[in-house]
Image (cartoon, rainbow, N blue to C red):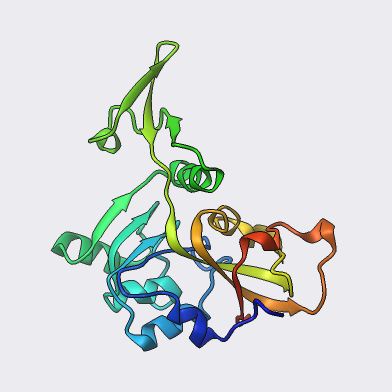
Length: 216
């Protein structure tokens, strides 16, 4: 269990000004124990990369409410009114990215690619400031890879080697984020002594640096 660390230690790896990816789709498959410790520690000026900013009273949504986020790169913010308030007041920069584009940018970083080409956003505000490339007569936006200092992800079951399995749709963004950060912390609902059945493994342990015990 060399990868198993305390929540305190895991949170200490996330410094002021860090870029932080957090897995989850709203409350589904979202880590929360380390985020609670970040709130307690006063960690601030974070760049959040996530599908959404969750709800005001839940994990990464609390980071927004407590004004710990300086920039959010997300697909939607509608479930957390505080995000919109801080965006309009200029307290927090919000970069809205189409959901499929967000996923592919993260995947591209994990795969070592220079970016992706997508027609999504052509002719809209999404295109502003981006390179347009034409392929076989069709225009595409060049979207660059998205990588973070730390990825904080969720796992339903995690073994002592860091192999991760998921129940249902809890895998969502967690799987690609595990490949696209310098340090990967998995918050496990259940920690298995020994090794998972290989057929259960979704994220190989080679991608995971640290494991913490999470809540249900």
